[in-house]
Length: 103
Image (cartoon, rainbow, N blue to C red; front, side):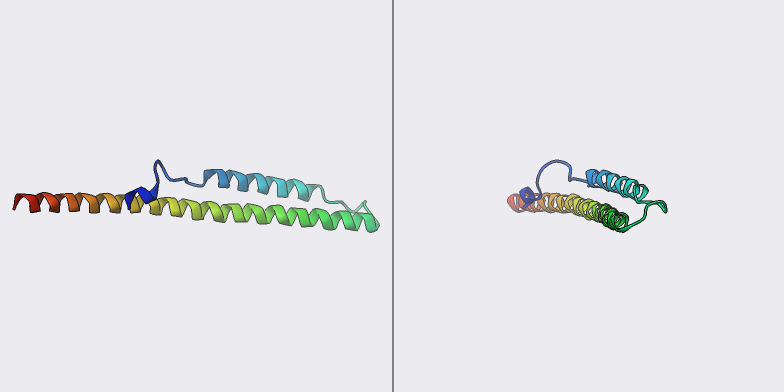
């Protein structure tokens, strides 16, 4: 069972947090690219609509990356706990085996 938990340090999700920061920066940049009051007409409205949609998509991706990073970190912590539990159980079983052999 212990082998099912993999090897090495569990992934902590830091790259996802970094990705979230990039999406947040992108969202802010897209906000600054929206047309100001000097823009008029249907093309301006269409451009603003697409810019807002892209800004919202980037903000959503930032939030989703943050949520996924938290989930991945939590799962990594559970893998560590599971490894500890398996290690303790294995040690107890070895001790029981030694006691049985001595009897």
